[in-house]
Image 1 (cartoon, helix red, strand yellow):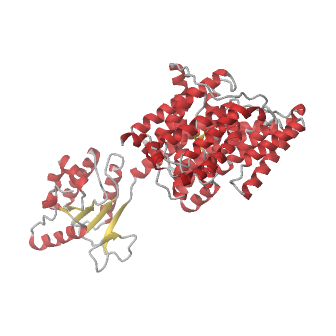
Image 2 (cartoon, one colour; image 1 turned 90 degrees about the horizontal axis):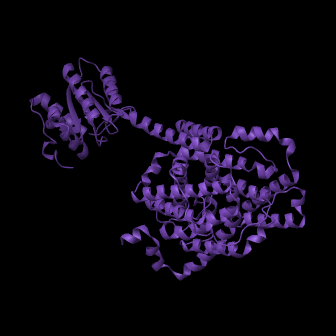
Image 3 (cartoon, one colour; image 1 turned 30 degrees about the horizontal axis):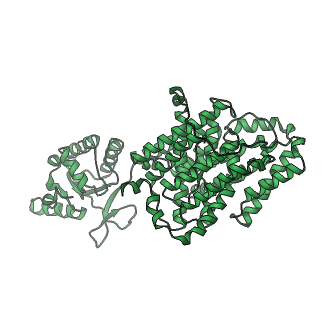
Length: 576
């Protein structure tokens, strides 16, 4: 049973229904057809020969169904991760060299080890530390950078490599007179053709069609004789097994890149899997198991000359739309890709690089999420500015610094929210015993002799000063002559640390000096345990703690008459 937890195929394969075979076969062949030109394009984008894009496609398609929790996600080379490889490794070695390939493969191994470790220790929750606006802003900017990175092949130029938008645009404008027009017209024509096909039916393999047309045009029009760059010789055969040589220096140099790819590839793949599970009403994916599955694919792929891989938005969508029921569809896609590597790579000799550039540019259009930016601008300006800051940082500073900026913004956003949580002054709703926010319930009755405050977060070092300031501010607004009691509604406070304890002690001291009594309403079990653990139970007095605000008010009113305290929560103090 434990083995099935880590190798899900052992659970679903014995239950496989033969009626699913036709769907999985069709979906797998469709994805395989789509992956052939895409894989070569992404290999080129990563700064490698196109064949390595195919190598990065075949092994993940075999491995992911063994360990992954989605039957529709298609793992392999993607534009975003390929660009990350180019941006990081090109700073260390010249793209296209043997050492560059070695570093790209080592990056895959390191990223795989990181993800396997995080998955085994169940750290999938880390995804929550990247806010959605940050992810959206980074992805949109990265899509633009990916498009710009193809200007060399699209315009037939030899521009300086960069993942900073101003550098690329400046280089392009200074070389406009050098545009190779046959290359440019071929590339633009390919883009227009694919966009038209996508509008007709997304299930049609537009990338393969345009690749075939490009090969035929280049071959029979002899475009290579007029300066149009083609792929030329592509090696035949499956990738061979070889252990990547790694040194301590390699680890030091590539660790930031490996960490970045680990995070981004996990986000990309999990977002795809979650979207597909919602669309087709499938069981939710397991983030920790997905981390493990992605890590294993990267790690094993590194022994077969493959650069880092992850889930593909476009191929996963096509896989789902083509009717894939299980991970068996990925096996069929891998089979088609393997046959291509064994027998058909010579057919791609005349494939123009401009066509591959067009395939990349069209594939990343969907990553630019303008609708999300407009929605946030209208509904949540803070999130919009977070998205905009990440977007601009990625465009101007580059991919890796953009990721770092986004991560820091996410953490800052979380810290800010926790440092200044919501609190409210409560009043009694007329004709009820319910107490609600006086700013939301206009008819709520607020007494001059009782101040009731609700604090809506754990009380800890990050917000203790804010808590003290809020209480002090509300006390100053009250009539000092008439105020007799402060009630804290702690129903939303689940814990407190030593700094929070000091804040409560400071508050109790100030209240005592002012002659104001204190009562606590609805301290939940974990908070009661913390109060006891820190010794605050004695200082506050269990007799001053109540199951609800109305009980606390009633006890105050009773004590005003009889001078006898209520012990409403005393018998339940140790119960959760």
